[in-house]
Picture (cartoon, rainbow, N blue to C red):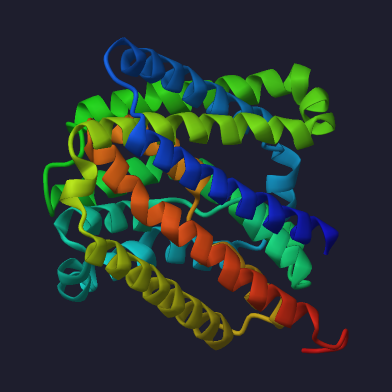
Length: 328
């Protein structure tokens, strides 16, 4: 429980940091040579971020939970199939509320993998199947490196030309994300112990990378007139849409897991692992997949959805945690 409480506090604080960075970029965007320097620094930070992801990912943890294949199929189906289909099917309702640009950002959010840390922390607090949560969350993050870009190219290719050319996008994914990740997995043989002992402060690498990407992306967007393109009513509509999508997904996952005969602990794991979308993966991946001012608009939905999912799932986890120990 202490882990989940600390996690919640840190992410709430981090959200405030991101809001501050957006305000900074709105009033003092990087321009000229400074903008170029931030782009280079951001690319290096993204490579380091995925290198550390590779170094932190334990193969033993994946093997330990991999036998629960039915649970993982449900989680992956929700993450990479139900979410994107929901985004497409709800277009007639969503697009008028948020506008076309933010709708594309919602489609991008729907294609992202699940979070790792929050899924595990909330499952732990709610007394779910923790080994399965570790396996599903870690595998989702890894699989997302391959599946998310393809989903994005398919979803946005059918609805606009905001994504990079297919071959160029795949090349960027391989160079900036996949190669550093594989290098981190290889390096784990030598630095795995050091990484495990220093997990607490190594989180700063993740957060610093995200802060750099957000500032650079929103600087580009502001320089190209972001806030004149996104009216206030569209932002309010975006909050409502994110709440609605999360509510639909939570109810659908819970009843589907119950219908499929999973026990309570497994249903809790499916609920928290299948309803999440990763800000930590979504921000750097947007830097790779999109160009110019479109990056900032693409990131708004996942940043808002991220905070909503944390608040809602914290309440749900506490309710599950309060159940009797012999509850079925």
